[in-house]
Image (cartoon, rainbow, N blue to C red; front, side, top):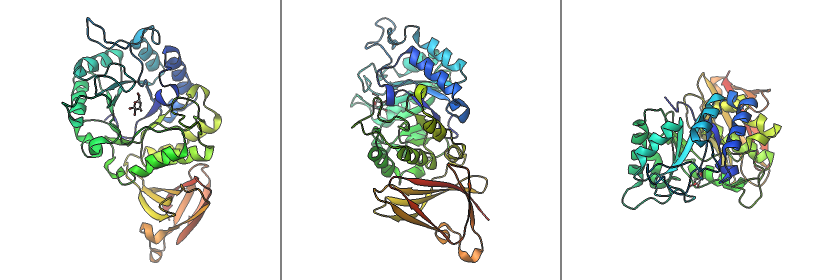
Length: 376
Ligand code: GAL
């Protein structure tokens, strides 16, 4: 099964946009292997839009890799990536042209899937720009899904229709393994907060086999790169909260910062074993909410994990310092049971004691706390 747990990797779009090439892909592959990212689970290296020539080959009809960006062709890049123990990902689009106006796969789905298989691709992100009005969204994703299944290679399908057509209700049935549910992320707090909030009620559709993808992480970008938006970037506290949200809701962890230049704070955060364990829990359950105040900006979520464990997320998305209360009764542990919760700080790994009846937690603006918990 390709996506038993949320896929993890790196995608070029957030930082590099159209500035991709053979060399930076190889350097990124090196960084993923050498910096412990692959060992932490980040195995897909995905090349996003802007990798091909502007036109298909007039004779074969195939998409052709950009001769300047990828002078050795795509198979050579893929071989290098595989040589590092990583998996290789490509990008195309359901329309006639991609979002950045390169050839799309409409009416060439089977030929393109074959081409990606020839490259040795293990992953295909499939976008939704410039689609003809003659085909609806579900049919276009069925077509690429069938084409991939006919390609002779096992290729993960990462759908990217930004949540159109109530995607969460049908995308699993057509064979995709993850699905973008929102518009594009930008590297600032409001962007990821709004993306997250828009999906709170939709996460229950996400489960092993097909996960809700709320976009590539901006963690560690510090406003550098293609999706820097207003150039604000995020603070380390905000990146920590972004990562915690993705992990708590079993979202695919696709890194978007320049991994060749990743700093120690970011590396430590994205390789945190406890957070990754929460994201990758094989049961993939959606959390339930136990506390909601300040217009919904201050919340506590409880995620039931395998092995009789829980993850607790105390979240302050508001702009003020805020207090939240986890009342054990509200999560199904009445006082009369005589039970409490033994908790461990997920970020530091430190024992944080036993909760009896309730836990009060103060949080700075945009901050969060995450605990692993067991009933004792
Ligand atoms: C958007 C997509 C982005 C990126 C971009 C490339 O539609 O949401 O993640 O792939 O296209 O042009």
